Amino acid sequence: MRVALFLGCTVPVRATNYEQAFRRVAAEFGTEVIDINDFSCCGFPAKAVDRMIPLVMAARNLALAEREGVEAVVTLCNACTETLTETNHVLRHDPEQQEKVAGHLANLGYRYDGSMTVRHAARFLYQEIGLDRIRTKVTQPLAGWRIAAYPGCHYTKPAEIYEGFDRPERPISLNLLVEATGAETLELEGTCCGGGTLGAKEETALKMARMTLDQMKERGADAVALICPFCDVMFEQNQKKIERQVGVEYGLPVLYYPQLLGLALGIPREELGFSINRIKMDRLWQKLDAQAMRG
Amino acid sequence: MPEPLIDDQLDPSFRVQISQEKGGEKITRCFACATCTLSCPVRAVDDSFNPRRIIHLALLGAKQEVLESGFVWLCSSCYLCSERCPQDVSVTELMCAIRNIAVREGRIPAAYIAQLELLDKHGRLYEIGDFENKKRTKMGLPRVEEKREEVARILELVGATRYYRKEPAP
Ligand code: SF4
Ligand code: SF4
Image (cartoon, protein in one colour):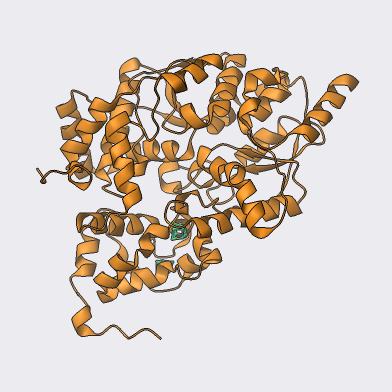
């Protein structure tokens, strides 16, 4: 399968571990991942200003992918996923907006027929690669790792635009993907990480993140597996700050799902971007090395 | 106790304005059940935020209060309320509709001005220059080029440059 990888703003600068691990894992399954140099921001940050901005920006990105003839656009960030998917949905269901967007695109020299499939990387692994193929390629099962799988809001919501994928409020696909690596998952009540509120009121956003971190810790997580760079900002990059504010210690390593999968596939950790992860993984490395020695 | 809002502070056309805005069309369907507020993760940690209250202030016509208080900017866009609302009000989209109105009426938060400037300058929220690309190359990742011209052009076409460029609206 030939797909275009949509990086967006944050991933290529701030979450290169996620990007590197996904590319590496995709190659392992024989997926041809191409880069389209003309891609820009998806448009999400400007929706609050004027919702026409993300519609035109997303449609332009999708038009580029259509022109390239790829089978799907694979996204890494939940906000990019939502914006590109929502744009397809609006263009297909709202003729008035469709006409406006088409007019702006024509002005820029583009045309978008609305045919491009958008897939979050995790959904891509779950639906296009599939759990069976993943399981057969696992050479280093992560037995005994307790993982808090955290899909984030826009992976499945708003349900209307995702056309029946997974369960909107309590998705299970990421749990199943984590379990395919041999790790265990734990039950979490899915609450928002707070990323969307960080810019408006930091104190409130950090409290939101803390609710989930508390839950993960109480339920005995060894680490968190994420699929969105905004969730990472809250749970990993702000973890120390939250610890200082509330006087607790989480010490909870946060990694991106493709990194976890990469380890289970036996890919060397140097090729999975772990130097970027901020929270010490020592305990997990010890587990892994002990497992590897036992073979 | 705050003073009650009385007639001359209310603008009955506000609900019409919202229902004519993309995303705000379904505001008058709300029957005040509070499912949105009870589901809201922002509300769970910050009781100054209350989506049902915002909706009812808007329906009442308390335009100034809704726009000035800035509460609509606290919504994290998690869509939980939208999934659960029995009247399918699309509360998340409604918050966005009110944000869009606030921006047009001169109340754009500074953070969004900064983001528009970045999009205009880099085509993305983060700069990717030689420094960033060197780091990428080290990790075996392909170079990424900035594509700002077409993004800036989109901001012009949509009429958004007036929010951050010091020039009169087109
Ligand atoms: S859940 Fe829907 S109907 Fe109930 S108060 Fe909120 S917007 Fe109104
Ligand atoms: S979308 Fe906004 S208002 Fe609705 S539950 Fe989430 S944070 Fe609250």
